[in-house]
Amino acid sequence: MKKIFSLLIVLTCILSVNAQDFKFGVSGGMNLNSITNNENKIGYNVGVKGEYFFKDDKGLYLDMGIMLTNKNWETPYYYNNGDKSATKWSANPHYLNIPIHIGYMMSVSKKFSVFVNAGPYLGVGLFGKYNMTSSNKNTTVADNIFEDYLKRFDYGIGGKIGVEYAKHIQLSAGYDWGLKNLKTKTYPMDYKNRSFDISCTYIF
Image (tube, rainbow, N blue to C red):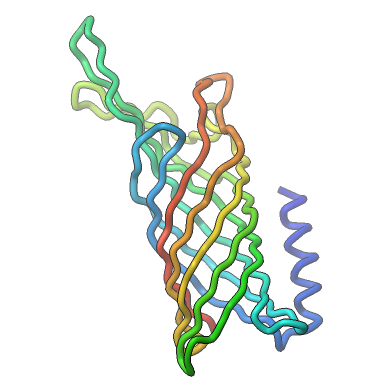
């Protein structure tokens, strides 16, 4: 956690040297999430982002964000032939996600620009419940999934493509590919986050 905040402080200091090339905004949207080999479930993302345009090439920019991201997921039903029961597990983990991407923006008219960016992200698990559903009865297995069932820290790579209108409104679609296996000794199944998102951003 300290390393993440140290990196953010360094980036802020660098960008503040040329504030005229830096823009920031607020962003929110919907995610379609899953973990390895399990079913998709809808979540959300909300937070702030910044864009720093390099002087030598006005189209090339650094895209950063601090996002609260809800990465819901659930397993399919597993059937027990012995007692004819069916069980599935679900979770609603919330992360502080910090994407740091390199992008390029190109004007296509006076009002519209298109952009694409890609790069790594860091994720810190904050809170979330882990539930089990069996015979139509829902039971909370853990009030904090990050204590026993998932590792707290995540990282991966991601990318976005989108359009900007009037230098203020952005609509984008993106995908994050988790690289870290989040399994623990308590529940040693393979867990890697996968997330598709559609987001709207207002740039000030």
